[in-house]
Image (cartoon, rainbow, N blue to C red; front, side, top):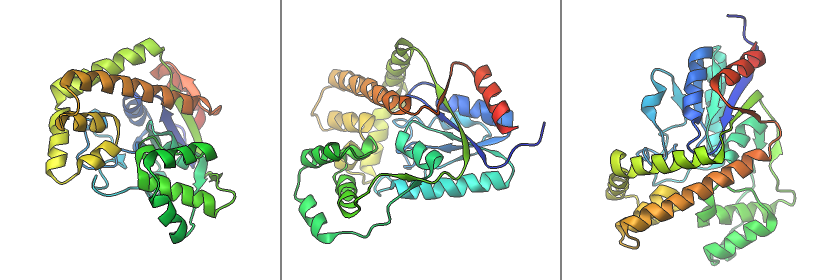
Length: 295
């Protein structure tokens, strides 16, 4: 195999259920790579089924940024970026290919675009004012200032308070970029009807065969509050509602299906705005692009 160019990284993006992990594993096997998960929920220990970790799919391929923190604790974008940089630098040092794979657009961009994240100190007076506002009021402020926020964080009151605080404290709060790596970003593109079918099929499998409801029960039994589980959104939110007898089983399936389809649409909207993404249709096309990029 020809000598590989240094400092090059692959990123794989796309909506939920499009096969990002599967493609990442195939590329890792073909090009001696390791995978960095860019998923805001896969960092949490014990949240396996709802986040689609699919750990068996990795085989002997080494992965990073999965199962790194308790779901009882907060995990920030800055923490993720720091750990991701550390993992990527180590992979490159060992002359292997780092492959980022995930559907959390903000996490992917933090690495690939090299966001310079805020180091502003807490503003106690402002924080006290924001703490008295409702979640909906905070969300309205976020929309007003057009601040970038991760999907799960949009329903996390404390995260929104901090983001608004940063915006108010720093006049020019917009992520500034300082890319560390030369990145080839591949986007998986399938017709909407195929993604829709995959989402529905995977939802039923997770609920009826893989034990999604049991997973949420177990997390709650271990001390993760329903409020915290609901903050994670999607599967954890609606299964928590079901376990609290707020919705029926049929409503769980229906409401969760709608929520996941909407989530996939938002993911695509996020990624489509990035003109640097190379949209691919199959593994052969992906391999050819990677080969031209790294050698």
